[in-house]
Amino acid sequence: MSETIRTADIIGRRLYDAGVRFAFGIPGGEVLTLIDGLEKAGIRFILSKHENAAGFMAEGVYHITGAPGVLIATVGPGAANAVNVTANALQDRVPMIVITGCVDLADTVTYNHQVFDHRAVFSPICKESFTVPNGYVPQLIDKAVAIATEGRPGPVHLDLPIAMSAQLHEFSLNEYRPLPAPVRPAKGINLDTAREWLSAADRPLMIVGVDAVNQNASQSVTEFAKKFGAPVISTYKAKGIISEDEALSLGGAGLSPLGDKTLIPLIEEADFILLVGYDPIEMRNGWRSIWNTAEKNVVEILVSPEYSYMHTSSIMFICDIVEGLEALSKNNSNGETWINKEPAIVKKETASLYGQNDPWGPAAIAVTIRSSTPRDTVVTMDSGAHRILLSQVWETYEPHSALQSSALCTMGCALPIATGVKLASPQRQVIAFTGDGGLEMVLGELVTLRDLKLPVIVVVFVDASLALIEKKQREMNYKNAGVDMNETDFAVLANALGGHGITVENRDALESAIKNALVSDVYTIIACKVPRGSYDGRI
Image (cartoon, rainbow, N blue to C red):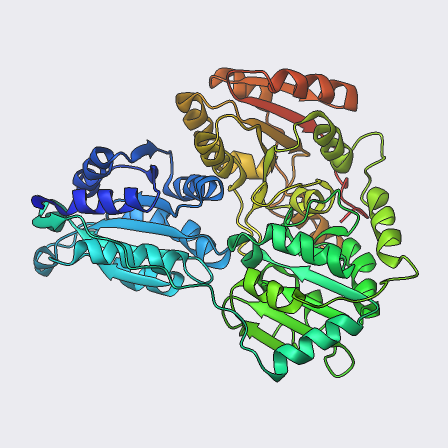
C-alpha cells in the first residue's frame, strides 16, 4: 500500500523509524517544509539560539537514546554556523544527521544571495555528503543513518533543495536493510597468539576508548577485566565504561600531564596491553609511542582500522568489540596478576593528587558535588582547565554520563549538551560544568533552558580568565594577552533570565546550593569563585 507524500514527510518518517524524536536548529524559509514534515512524523523541532549549540543539544540526546542526533540549518549563514559542531561530531565519533536547506540548482544560475556550496564545505568534515534527489528518498535517509552509525560513528550531511522538500513522491512502507551480524576475530595464528600472551601475562593492562562505549561493551569490558585481573585506563569519553569505584578502574587519561606521571609508569610496567576500542584522537601528544612492541605484547581490538600512527600494536583485530573480548576470553585464564599491587597504589595516590582534599578549589568543588548527587547523574564539561581536572576527579559509574568535547575540544559545548540530555531524560539529574569564558559564549542558551523548563544545574568556575590559556602564557613567560575578562555576576544573570542563581566560595555554601538545585523546577547557576592559578600543579 502506498501514498503520495512530500520529500519532507518521507525524511521525517524514516528518521522517526530510526529512533529520532528530536531535531534542533533555527528555522529559515528554506527549511520550513522540512520542519513541518518532521513534526508531522512525530519528531519535535527544538529552537536554539545558535546552530552550533543546536548540534550539541542533538549530541546530548544521542547519548541518552542511542539514535543519531539531527541538526537543521537554513541556507547560507545557518549552514556556516553548523560547521564547528559538525567537525566536532566527526572527531568525537558522534552520529549526526546534518540537514541544510539550499537554493534550487536552477536558481543558482542567476541568483547568488546567501548561496555558497554547502557540500564543498561539509564534505571534508562528514563521513558523507549528499544532495537529496528527486527519487529514492527513503533509501537515501536509511543510507545516511547507516553511514552515521556504523563503525566509528560520525556526521552525514544532506543538502535539501527548497523545491525538493515539497516534491511529491509515491511512498510505501519498506523494511530497513538488515544490519550485518557482529564481526568476530578470525580463527588462526593471530588469535591463538593473543590468547597465549593473555594467559601468560603477569601484569596485564587494558586501555579502553570511545569505540567500546559506542558498541555498548561496558559489561564485557568489566567482566574481562575482573576475569584476567587487568586494571583499566579509559580515555575521557570512555569514562564509566567500567564503574570508577571498581578496584580495577584507574579512571580517565588523555590531557593531564599530572595524571600521566602516575599512569604511564604503570603502562611501562605492564607485560601485556590490550587496547579496546582505543581511539588516540582524544590524547595529547605525550601519548605518542609510549610503548615499544619489540619489548611488549600489545593487542588491539578496533571497529575500524587506525591510521593515526600515534601508537603501534603487535596484533590488531578489526571486529565487533564485544565479540573480540569474547574470543580472547573464552576457555582462557591466567594466574595472579600485579603481585606488588601497583594498580592499587596508583589508585590510592590519585585519590588526593588533584587537590580533592583542599579546603576549596576546582577539585574540592567536584568531589563536594559528587558526594551530594545521585549515582546516575549526568555531567557535561566544557573545554578548559576545569575539564582536564574534572576528567581525572569526577567519579563516573556508567558510560555516557560524563560528556565533553574530547577530540575537537571546542568551547561552549557543556550547556547545550546538558540541555539535550535533560530533554531526552528529564528524570535524571544533569549538571553542566563550565568556565566563565565558556558560559559567556553561549549565554543565549540559558533562554532555551528557560523556555523548555529544564532544571539543569550549571556550575561555573569563576576566575575571570581563560584559565588554561593564561596558565600556558605564564609558563612560557609571556604577558597576559586576550585571556583576562571582567567578572560577570552569573547569579544575577540567572535570576534575570528565568532561573535561580547563587554565588559560593566554600564547601558548606556549595553543599547547600546543590541541595536546593536538585529540587528546583527551573535551572540553577552556581557560580563558584576560585582564585587565579587554582589549576597550577593540579592538572
